[in-house]
Image (cartoon, rainbow, N blue to C red; front, top):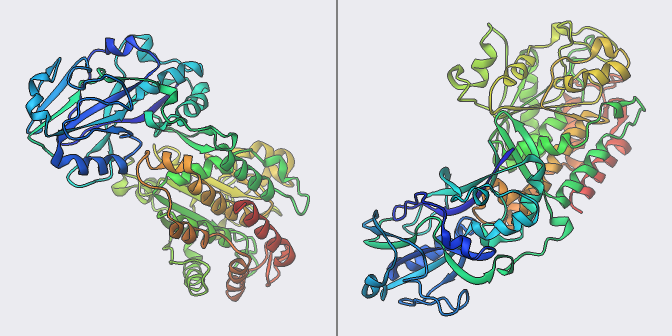
Length: 575
């Protein structure tokens, strides 16, 4: 069972809504568009209209009356707003003074007031029922549940407030149907904004559950045409707490095409056996909702060289970090203390060469006791105050069942690896932290999610398989490709209007062309990734498979192999 929350009425200093009994008036005309009502002095009308325009999902404006106008011709012929709601709330100096059945006694004051008719979530209940989605408040004959959130509406003039939402329980198997049927009725608040766990002297509103009834069927009020490509699809991205996200069918198809591209197996190593569909999609949906991301990389496979690191991992990590920065996420990279200074220099050079716009802090983690990971992940070691809400490991050596760390040849490299795995195992116990692992062989941190497949199908699998599972495990032919794929998928999601609306709780405007251009500039390019390899070679970092010191990753030269994948990724992303 998911909880579908739709932006609905508002709560400002002038208006405080409280639940009453379910309106008998609403039952009288099922299927008709209903309207929330706000009546304000004309001096406040322009500010409130701007407030509605800025917050069109919770405040979909159906009609704004002229000053002193009682009727609402475009919505209902012969109407009189002084009498047509079953009950009204009267606010005096911002405080609910009383509830009345008629506003006729206020006619002199209403001559200087403006009425706003706002879309109501009851308007999509018929669409929900037609889609086979049960509507519990209707079934029980009660008003819908409403509550005040911590999401701030966008301020306009003197109007500002937290959003108030209606909440409806929806069976998990009906979530797609619920999202799709409500998405096409934006003037009844549209699709869900979350799935999961000023004081005028005088003002009036309808009483909750006692809306103004129009003459128009709900589905005829400016419905959108639901084109197949723009059909909303829902995905569970967390169980602790339960949280779903939404993206359009087109965005989902693009990301699935990217996922298929990066799982190409250039050396026929059988990595397809480790592949789980939609792990890229769900990981990126979760990252899109995140605010602070910790990335780790570093696989010291070349224990006989100094440095022992390989060229797979850091380029993908920096590609992800660049896009996350563009999306205004806080990003930190954690690595081995042994390699800390080198990685800080690599980051500095990446900024100077234009691979990434702004330097990402590079830090280390070492265990000094049983609570070290908790102290690192959470402020004051308090699990309710995590510093990061998503951890990503890309081509990071992962702890095997016996507690050691192995390269693909089965050589134990534990002496070169700090226990960053502890961060992932501890994160799995903290509500609100999600983890992702990216790998190409199964011995990487996070790939414990596919441990059984690694043991069954990969060379030395029983020995090398990582035992630490991430919430999402992204399999790629080369781990860097998985990092590039994450950057591209995040770009696609944040250009998807359906995901953008959901991500921002139905508030605010879409991306401007300038914002879109800035994010496009952070996508991986052939030139940037070639420059990144030059930087790694400068510091003696070698190809994983061959130990060659050159423009090579996992035994594949940058041209034509990696450059071709990068260009194909861009083509899919920008299609």
